[in-house]
Every structure is written in structure tokens, then in C-alpha cells.
Amino acid sequence: MGIIKNLKEEVRIIKERDPAIHSSMEVLLYPSFKVMIHYRLAHKLYVSGHYFWARYISQRGVRKTGIEIHPGAQIGKGFFIDHGNGVIIGETTIIGDNVTMYQGVTLGGTGKEHGKRHPTIGNNVMISAGAKVLGSFTIGDNSKIGAGSVVLSEVPPGSTVVGVPGRVVKRNNASLPQETMNQTDLPDPVREDITVLQRENSELTNRVLEMEDELKQLRRLVVMSEEAKTDNTVKTGKDKS
Image 1: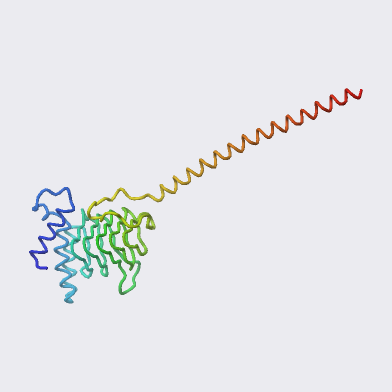
Image 2 (image 1 turned 90 degrees about the vertical axis):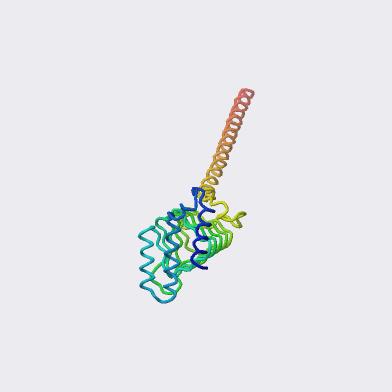
């Protein structure tokens, strides 16, 4: 894709996914737009073996936008970073088409190992604000990573992941993440667990109360039985006398 086509594509993506934009000229001010221009040039230099100049251009992009994309990362079409400050994308990261990220996202490794050490992000994935995806594994197509989640293992396609560490709480999303751009209406497994515990505690409390009533009735019966025996003994004694 040529430079003009690239620019037009970046403009289209930002206007499509950010409801706050009112004109095409505003796109020129977006960190995502600026950093992707730097990345595309830096990546070409990196692939050609001009590593110093690739990193030089990449670091200029970091200083201007607060977004750090290693020039060795592979990024597909339709990539968009909303706001973007604090985003870090590692060298061996592979990102598919139509991926959306928010501020504070890290696509990183877990140590000093060599080779493929960063995640592979599938197509149509949304990674919400502050999420961390660490390690060499795949986030499946059409998945959604919740805000603040820490993902340390493979995510199947069509999944919603939340929590620390991240866990799959929903499979086979009905809509594509970039269509709704919804970071908030996600399942909350902690709240669901608390709700279950509250319900079970309520049921247990009711059962204990029922058992206490049954015990009181049993005690009354025992007392009545003892009183009846006593009365019977007294009557028997009087009859004999």
C-alpha cells in the first residue's frame, strides 16, 4: 500500500471508530495517526536491516505520542489506538487486521528469552484500557480483553477475558468488538462469585433457622412428655394410697 493510500486508510479508521471526531483534519492531531506513520517507515527500515535508523524514527514517535511500537512488530490493516498514551508493543508482536487498543495497553514478554516472546493478536480484537498481555501466545480472532486485565495464556477465538490473572468469562461474542467499542459491559466473575456466596449464605441461614424451630418444637414435646409422665406417676401414687 502506497503512502497516500496508507494515509487515507488511517483517516478512515479513526473517523469510523472515534465518535469524538468531527472533521478529517482532526485526524492529523491524533497520536494513533502520528505513531502509525512513524511505525510504517521504521518497520520498512527494520526489515531492510537498518536497525539504528528504524529505532531512531521509532523513538521520535514515542516522544511525540507516548506510544512505543518496536519497529520489528508486525501490524496488519485497520489498526487503531484510542488516546494511546502508555501503549507498549514489543518487537516480536504480531497484530492482525482491525485491532483496537486503548491507553495503557502492554503487549510484552515475560523475560529475556530470545525468539518469539511477545503475543500474537488475531483479527477483530479489542484490548481495553490498562490491559497487559504478556508472553508468546495467541489472542484468538473476535476476542475482547477487559480493562485492567492481565493475560498470561492462550485465549480462544470469540472470547471475553477479564481479571488478574485474566480468565475467559464468555465465549462466542455475537458482535465484533470494533463495531461496539464497548469496554464496560463485560461479565464480572468476582461479583458473580460474591452473588453466589450471598445466595448460598442466605439459604444456609434459612436452613439453620428452620432447624432451630424444629429443635424448639422437639424440646416442647419432650417437656410435655416429661410433664405427662410426672402427672401420671403422681396419680398412680395417690390411687395406691
